Structures are given as structure tokens and as C-alpha cells.
View 1 (cartoon, helix red, strand yellow):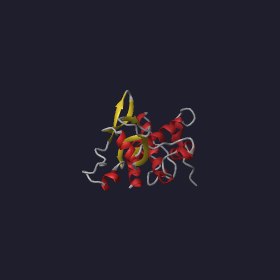
View 2: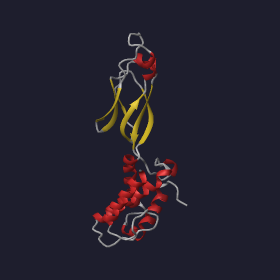
View 3: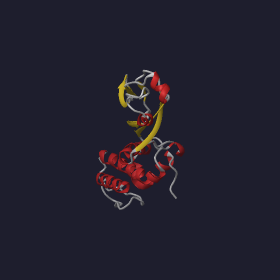
View 4: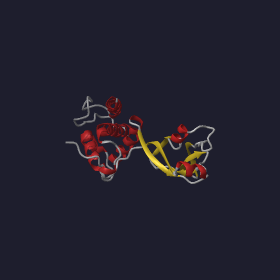
Length: 209
């Protein structure tokens, strides 16, 4: 039975996949394996794009708003689109122009930008809650409930974390064959870390297809 999506359970399974090679990582507790899982979660957003819905509370004539910490890029918003589709440009309550959603860095922090900023008349008419979607990163958390990687993609996450671990072994100059555990697809148990890392990456793409 596979473990949960907690950081510790995932790290335990990753060590099992690495088998004897896991002993090459000597960081405190599981910090090395947590790093591999974090790298894997970040790249998983490329393979399995994560679309998140969030909202802003609009302020009249305000352009910039704080961006979520896990935001990669804003996608879209439907704020005002229903009203715009039901009304005519010559109507007095025609909601134009609607803000365009963007992302900037301001003072070292990333912020969402609404251009042009919403007016008080628009907020009164269309509401102060601005729902939008964005592409987000994945998180592997100590508590399984706070891990945002879907349980169905657990095997992809672990394979990508295995690739990250093997790339580190290759970068550290480990040249002798590495013994891997079972349950890693069609990969051979013995081989150089660099070659196995490349094979792990190929297996990730196959799993995600």
C-alpha cells in the first residue's frame, strides 16, 4: 500500500526507490529528500498545469493587488463579462472598459495588476469580488492535507524526485553503478546516476502522457 501525500511518507518511498544510493545523502533528517520532492513538485506544474481559482476584493481606482505566493502566471477573469454580453454598447450601464489582468514586480514583491483599474461605478454595478484563475505551483507539505499534488499523480512526483536525486549524485561525481529499488517502471537496477536520471525523466514524461 502506498503511503500518504505527507512529506515524510513521500520521502520514505523516495528512499526506497533509491535503495543503497539513499545513503549518499547525509543531510539532517530527510532534508535532502524533501529538497528533491520540492524540485519535483515545482516541475510537476509544467507537466500537469495546476489551475487555481482565487478572488480579489476590489478597491476603486486601485491598480495593484498582492499576488498569491504559489502563482506562476495569471490566466483569466470573467468579472463583468456576463453583464457585458447582456447589454449593448449604447446602453448607459455598458461596463466598459473592463480591467485586463496582469503581473508585475513592484518593490521586490510580485503583484497582480488590473489595467485600467476598476471604477467605483463598475464596482457598484458588477460587485467588489473579482474572481480570477491562475497557474500555480504545487506544494509538498508536512501534513498530507496541505500537499497540493493530487494523489493520482503521486507516482509521477516520486519519479521526478528520483530524477532530481540522481542528477545530484551525478553532479557529485558518483561514477560507480547505483542500486535502485523496485517499483520504478522499466528502469534497470544498475547504472550510472546520470544515465538513470535521464531515464527517470523519460519515464516521467511517459507517465504523464
